[in-house]
Amino acid sequence: GTLSDDDASFVKDLLKHHATAAAKEGPGIAAIKVGSNPKFPDTKCFVLVRVDGTEEDFSYLKCVANIFPDLESSRVSTRKRKADAAADEPNAKRGPAAGSSGDGDTESAGFKKGTIVLVRDLPEDQTVASMKSAFGVAGLVRYVEMVPDQPLAYVRYETAEHAQKALEIGGMGTLSILDGDDEKEYWDKIDSTRDCKGRGGGRGGGRGGGGGGGG
Image (cartoon, rainbow, N blue to C red; front, top):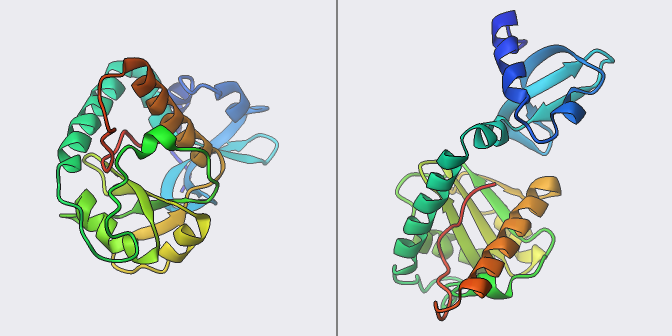
């Protein structure tokens, strides 16, 4: 529903910290309501109702990240520790992806449209190994990222066909193909991680299987 004047005022102040705040506001904001992005109907967000009748949603998480950059750095550090721990888990040997742990995959990653499955409402007690096993029935799983402290994960497949088939898997939450700006941002993050490893050197064999952060 539409936010009250006080709540709307708070959200407007938050929006000021968005990287494209002016573009989001457009000709002016008439009201703010709770809604969802058409691409991700199961995820709630704030929707700006402009004075010309058009609507635009925005990510409040991006605003918070700009306000508290140290908090974002801390989240990245936590994700890295969990990724390293997850990489030590034994690889499950079931499904077409059996034997593929995705080790070092970020080193050779290249943009492949439609190959990343976004997993929301992930059931508790899942691990990187158990997810590789479950999603491996659809095809070759290249990488699994679990977002710390959130029921959210990303599963990257070798091909878009495998990713599309994965949407038929049951019991693993709400599944959708990552696309649009979110997909581009995710691949940019992968490229950034690869570049950092290339400059750092010294860590042979790349450690895959865990995550490096959600978008």
